[in-house]
Structure formats: C-alpha cells, structure tokens
Length: 335
Image 1 (cartoon, helix red, strand yellow):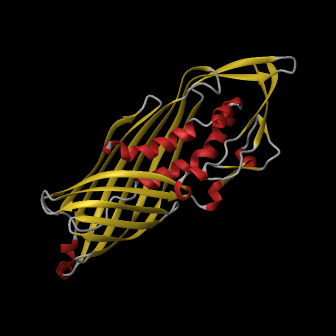
Image 2 (cartoon, helix red, strand yellow):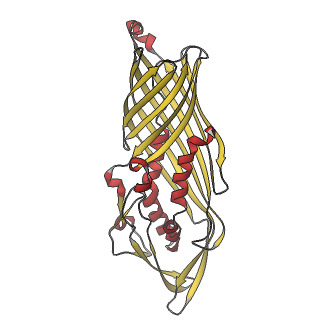
C-alpha cells in the first residue's frame, strides 16, 4: 500500500482531466483547433506538475553521516496565478470554431465551459456540430492546486554527499497506471566558508531530476472507436543553493535556485466523430488526434522550518515562483 501513495493523487489528477467527456468532445474541431483548445485548458495543470515535482527535495542543508539515512513522506501543492484560471478563446486563432463567449475556464477555473460551434468541411461536405468546453475542476483540487506527493529515501555518502531517491514502480489499475523516478544529489559546502563550520549554519548545493509516466484507458462511452487511451509524460529538474540553521529542536532552512521541465499529453486510438450535414449525419474517424507538449521554467526562492522530535521530523516550506508551492511532510531520520 505504501508504494501506491506517491502516485495516487497524480493518477487521479491526470485521469480526471483525461476522462473528461467535454475534453474528448473537443476532437469535433479541426486537429489544429482541438490541439489549441485542449492545450489552453490543461496547460496550467501541466505547469503545476512540473513545479510541484521540483519541490520538497530537502528539509535541511546538513548532510547525513556516511550511510546515515532518512525516509520522508510529503506532498506539494502548486497554485496557479489568478490569470491562469481562464483563457481567451479569441487569442487562439481558431479557424473551424465560433463561440458567443470570449473566455472559458482552464482546469483551475470554477465556471462552466463555453459552448463551441463547429463549421467545417468533412469528406467534401459542409458540416456543423457543437460541444461544451470542460468546466473547471477547482472544487476537486485541494486549495485549488496541483498535488504532487513524494516518498523519498536519502542516504549519506562519503565526502559530505547525500543521494536522494524517489522510485515507484508502475502501479494502479487497468484504467490508470503510472510510475515515478527521481534522483537528487546534495553536497554540503559549509567548510569552504571557514569559521562558519563552527556555527549551526550549514550550506549545500542541490541538483535533482524527476520523471513520471501515466497511462489512462478511455472507456469509449463518449466517442465511439477503439484502443482509446491518454498517455502523460513529465521530466523536470532543479538546481539550488540551500542553507539551514540547525538547532536541537527547530531547524530553519531555505534555498534559491532554478527549476524547469517539460511534459507531454497524447490522446491515442481511433475516435468516431459525428457531424450534421443538414440533411443527415456523417461519421469521420480520426486516429491519434492529440500530441501536445508543455514546458515551464523559472527562478525560485524557498523558506521553511522543521521540528525535530528525536528521529521523527515534521517540516513545511513555501516556494515563491511562477506557481507558488506549499510543501509539507514528515521524515524518519537516522544520522
């Protein structure tokens, strides 16, 4: 059960977006327009995942003694700025769609999606169709933020290094399954500052990388077809300089650095699209209709605190970045 915890909310989040009936209906638009509308809706979520995956890697700058270790269980919540709760339809340059609405919510929004009207040429005939954009799912998200849990092992190495590992083999059900891998390296450099190594102050540098894959099987109840699925992939990285004041009970820590990453979402399989011709209907089948890429990057500043009760630790921190991120968790540390 424990190994399923870090991916449970991620599976829920990606599956919730992928299985949206309105999201599949966007395929009624031309391929280019469907890609633009889908990207506009889910881009904030993809950014939030990248920033969240780059968070929660440390709760002190002090490294373990050789073969000392800790196991931490935590979660990060990346919050979208207000302007990313909606997007402007007119800014997308759509060619096959019209709407009486000028904006529609992203997944971080709370309102119903705009109604879209399709006017296109399919199989040599002028056709029409209509669909609603997905509503925002803010009520289903904790604090209207993208959640990214993490189960992490940190081990002390010689020469004041810590190596950190996040590893979850593929878990889930036939409907949604995913795997997670993360690797970090922390090097304490307090000694290069001379007298500072006599103080409770510790200084380190950190580099970390994460990857995640989620596959979701689409049930085909909205649009007929076969072999329908959604595939999500993410890669992220961060480099930071971190410091901490380590006292017997309270530890104050923080860091500055840079985070970035990329993600992709593919909708695979065959989808049957039904259009009205005025005198009847026709069906057009599209294959592998969506292949979207997203990226995010920027500087970050973190401040946090940790409470030490022997080997048991409780920590929490807040990161200022494009999507501000709150991280918290517990750790069992044996130095």
